[in-house]
Length: 225
Image (cartoon, rainbow, N blue to C red; front, side):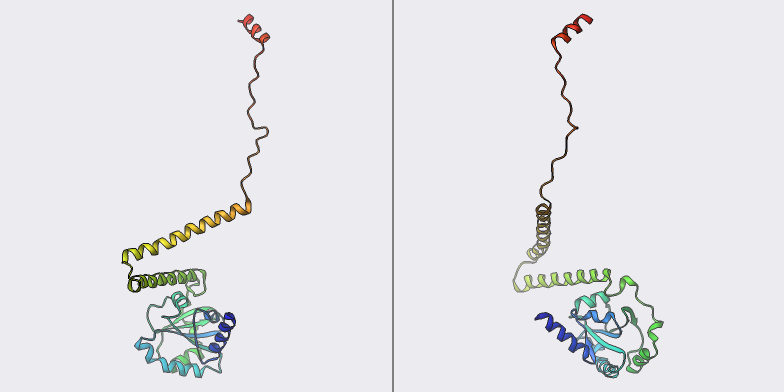
């Protein structure tokens, strides 16, 4: 049911004039020609180009260009992978290749940029910097995890009235306990699958015991001496 809901929401977003990117549908920008705006709702510069961006989406509706936007305060994974340091920031994506747009923020300039293929004059992002690469996915997950830890810290200290030191100890202890539990479960799983180690094969390796000397041999040795 949840998968169907996400799929239907994704289709609705894609069919609109300006695609709203989230962590659930961000994979769609890996194919096709995309012009993406990264913004924040509280940003004054973002608000100043909001209407022009909607007009650009209406203009590109029957063309091969896809106009999209991402709220960096909501889409943690993709915005973290994009390494957005200032807003608004515009990105052009062509078949998974990302480029940072640095031109004027005017609709006529945007149209010319798309129609005349000026994106090819921009330096593409290195493969390890591109969203969707292994390195940036790991970076995105780490930043998202740090944000969640910070949110948990704020909840413990501001709403649950837990002392700051106690909150830090709790947040440090939880990952350590989780890692220990994971280690123990892994060891138990390996032991259950492979069983106890077999004893080493020692046939032929045992040391031979010395043979006791007979009485006749002792007498013979005395004669020799």
